[in-house]
Image (cartoon, rainbow, N blue to C red; front, side, top):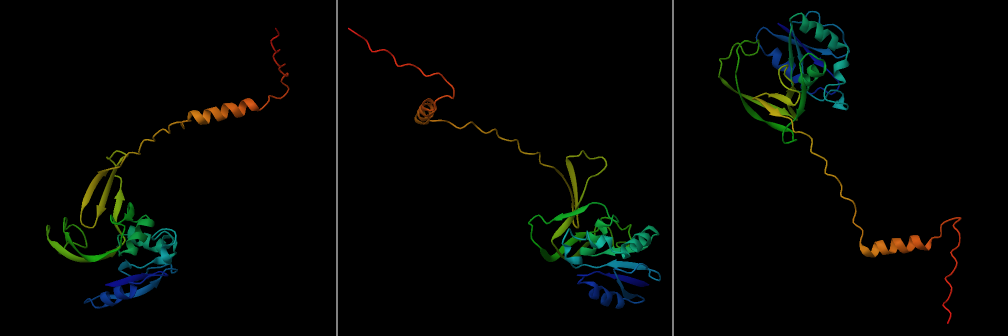
Length: 217
């Protein structure tokens, strides 16, 4: 079985993938540059992790427009096996090969640890050798760990988050009501000053008021 490992500017797990795949019995792996346009002769495709293009716009957004991704889409549409690892998973989401979008970790920090995952289904190419309910100890290292999806039967305010270990449905928080701003209070002293200043300013073109006559005996 021959694997194609896609190489983007900023990929940093591509060599690991090639070494690991070449160590498997009956398997071989070669690099494919992201500007190539063909996957002819390959039986499976691996999109490795890293920081494609530095992720300047959004993780995987720029890489999704690389010429090789059209070949990856055609390969997947024909039933080929495509594996996305870390940033490679993000590229597949941005390319439309996977639904949803990745969101930041709850703590907003990069996480590097071992995570226990429970096998929920063995009806896939990646879990058919496992047993349902089996717990796997998988190393993880990522800053974004969940795919945000809106299910067809969910109201617009409901968000379904599928992570590597759990599925949860949460209600989106309604926007906070705006508190009306109270009018500024004016102290009596300020009011007096305002009245005095307005009275001291003569109105243009207003007729002059004659002084009152002094009383006579």
